[in-house]
Image 1 (tube, rainbow, N blue to C red):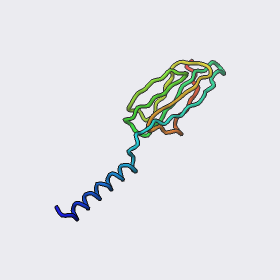
Image 2: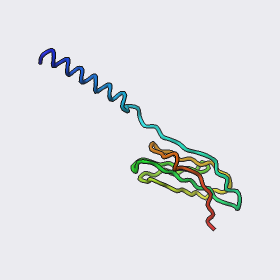
Image 3: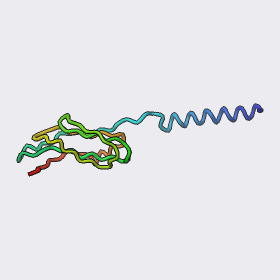
Image 4: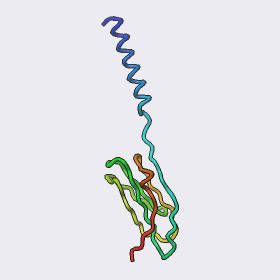
Length: 108
């Protein structure tokens, strides 16, 4: 192998390493949306809606500290049966912030 070939291979290796460093060698971090939902009027229950962009990712939803994690959902509604004013949260590496929220429901 000639000197020119070695320099070319070394240069290509450095270029690939540089692309990996710039393009996403950082591990994915979960996105979180959270808030407080007041459903005390009329004795309402608090639910949470979580929406993510990738089907295979895990989506964690919680209300009042009670949580549930499942994969293979784009949109997930979860109603743990807690009344009044509660905090809600949705977590996923591909969470769609505009599609996640707390809500009130009245099962009667």
